[in-house]
Image (cartoon, rainbow, N blue to C red; front, side, top):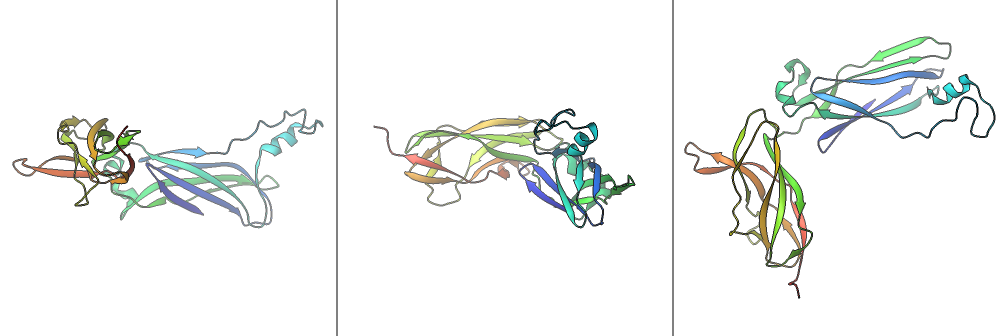
Length: 260
């Protein structure tokens, strides 16, 4: 059985291997073969260094066979199970666009195949390779994204503070001119843009990212929400209007009173 979870910019694949026979299984290997759009890394729990083949934990002698069995992966008979976890990441920023259409399924992404090799108690080999594992619905990836990089440690009411944002170009083409903007979603927002400090325009090459700063002013004390920071480009036939490409997730800051 497999479970797929999307976490931030990576995908976690959990594989449960269950022994449905009446004999124990000795696993030789559990490998995940990712599709061309992904790279896979197994996540393993750190193990303490096992005792040498000449001495056990209690100080009693032990042989090479006993030491090797201690390190073997054994699944008990009658529904015994072991779990394995793999971390998957996109091989490149435009993996969705360049992937083979034959490996895509109506809004889903193909992650890869799982291969399992084992032996029974009498040494009989066994092998199983799964079909292509699908990654569920693929969230839409904008060509250009903006996310929080850092925010001022201390925010004081009616004093400008800086929010730094990381802008990333996920496409294979240059993007620009780009410009950070701030358009509060609420009509009466406790945080507004510092109009005396405009954001410069810039360009990003394929796969590039850079950190840009935007200057804001808090008008009210207490916990204030900041929503409406976006990255935009020039749109329209005469490039007279601003086209919003991506909006940053909402964040909260605590605004202190005037400094004494």
